[in-house]
Length: 93
Length: 374
Image 1: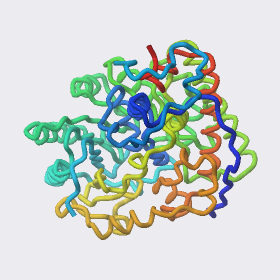
Image 2: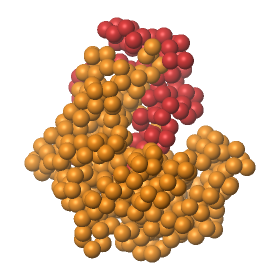
Image 3: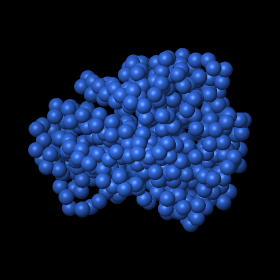
């Protein structure tokens, strides 16, 4: 099957926040690892995919792989219109 | 080349090339009664233990691994015996077609804390479109029975749904059926080998992703969220700012995929019938061939120019060697079908996430922003 790729050049920004860099971001990134790691290995299941269920709640060392660049939570989190999605490094401990 | 120890390593053991089903989209090659020996398994464990620091994820694969039930049991015990002295935790999984699960087997799997991943394509019409047994008979009822056994035993169960042009129309009902049984986790993957080019198929696929998104959204809103890989992974990737380098195709750099013969492969998809050495990257007796592995890794370093201009490339599976291989026969060359699936999945996931975030849905926030929820 020939490759005829159709890149999206202007996919609009979506209104739910990213989280990178800070302690909060590191926590979020590590925790969100539990719901990803998809290999996309066709009809069968990739071991990492299965592993996602095993790993629920497990940080799995991934914090160490997160960039330490000095960024903050996206402004979207700061502006979140709900009072329980906040940039609190101590939250969730 | 001696790899550094990683906290987690996946060891996939293909116990047998044999299977009691004849799924139309199966990539595992002709069925034959070739099974893995204990010596091969032992060597595979030892190779894996040289690489792992904390936890070894043991995945039994096939063929149908439950055709080798006694072997599965003995290899589990073997693995535990080899891991324990090294302080390594063994976390076992079996990927099965579900037809050979019995109450007694499920009880043992539960005692051993297995995760059971059951291939289930949906309601009878959807499932039997592709997943019939060797005699051509329906397997849907047997798989549902197997799922019931597993759930009754308290096993962690994951359903693996394959999207195929032949079953797209039933995706929503299919999710409903196993959700009502008690399954909450779903791996949803396209049949990469199918022809997705017809406009009608693409339209049906768009509707299928919409059906998935509707179930996903409803489940969060009722406080009993489903985990649907095709959507949750895209949301997670957005939250993280993209798929991490460590999540891309491993290709055998850290994880090990072992055929019954002991040959090592970059991915389970590459095993096939194991009669050619085209994709072999080593053997359990000698380890990974550094030169062959390097060739694979080098081949994955480049992406097509189109991908570099795409605004969702950081969340795309365009680096999945096995998916690319299935479609284009080139591990580094994604196809238009993957492009379509990824765009539909990302749009559907973002629609769900935007709505739930705006609503302040607690289940959604706990899953995707766990550190920020009081």
